Picture (cartoon, rainbow, N blue to C red):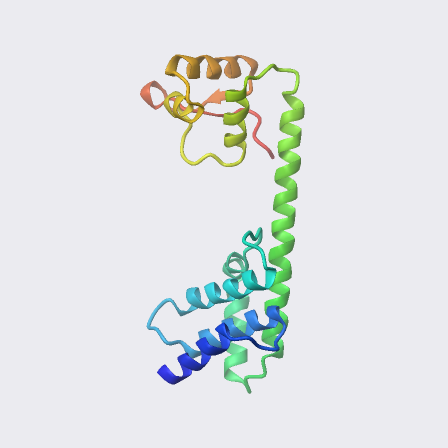
Length: 199
């Protein structure tokens, strides 16, 4: 097993003539077939595939995730792996499935990104007539882009670098105009969210 794993790593990290997308698919299959660990081989194989896709992209940022796509298509993934490993190890069907899954991952990311951009544009168009200060614009953008946790007045003050009173004035102004709404929790747990959530 050690020698096989060494051969695999040399191939993954070495220069080769395979087209980069095919190399990513072959590396995924080869590692998951080697199965060097008791647990986690699938996750590592997906990570190796993603690593080689990132190298193929030549970009530090990727907006799609093949790993997430494989998770969404788990049954088909396990079926194609089993067929490939139990037959003659002809990898043609596997590579076709891998490239199709990659295509679906890119399509899904494209649609998600486009939907998010359009929803954000609609949001700002709807509230364009309301005068907003820089703090409000900054925090609304944070909320729109997926704020982690609950937005409270104390978090607003910390992020906007303003006093708690100023944060509360900013929030109350947005509540009055209907841009924000209070969540169900009250008292010290009072938090706020966008009133015009994208559909």
